[in-house]
Image 1 (cartoon, rainbow, N blue to C red):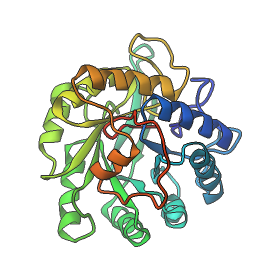
Image 2 (image 1 turned 135 degrees about the horizontal axis):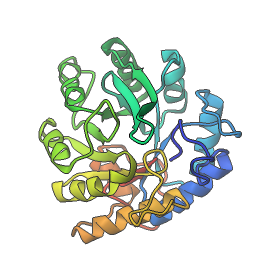
Image 3 (image 1 turned 30 degrees about the vertical axis):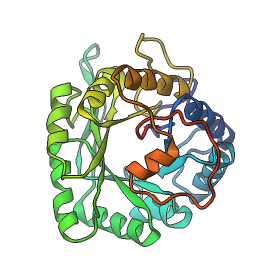
Length: 292
């Protein structure tokens, strides 16, 4: 929905305050989103890993779109593991993002002939196990984020240990330099490696996102779009909101002959519990569509 790295100098639509997040949540929900993935920020736009910001943002979103499924991030670089999970254990969202392996994480500029940034995204097994244990104790379903084929394989010992329970939800992330390239054939290969009965979505990074959304639709997967992953609509202009990206993804889903799913259907597909109180809402969301 907002990501953690970019700012309004790069894309003016990125939400900063809880009110911004609520407005973006409404736009996304109306356009077709059923799940929102959240990285928290201070009101001035700086990334926050504090429970206070996660709580304020989540409460503002739920007040605006009560039926939406909330997915909180645990991903970070250089942040103590306890500070990456306390929003999960205290707020208990329905989903928690779980990065499934370590990798180089970089961006290269062919114009400059140099790396824009270059770091190691470390997610060793001991940290993955700790995060899983915390999620399981809080009753939060992990969303397994896999940037390459090896990350998919990393789920096998965790399933064998009884820490990951099927059906596992996978996010297949393509387009980060250091991970899987953003090609339809790569997505098809990654999808073929998933355990039986898994659910999965594609997360395409950058302008190549739209071809990957179309590929996921044809392969029977689900899709995520949003300003964390890509700023641009298929025609090439910068998106004015998360909702504009969701609307474009919804059109691709429908053109593929599939239908979008509302939050209730998304919960069924993801094997989540029904919310305690049903809230009427327009049924016009992805299968299960979620965005950043």
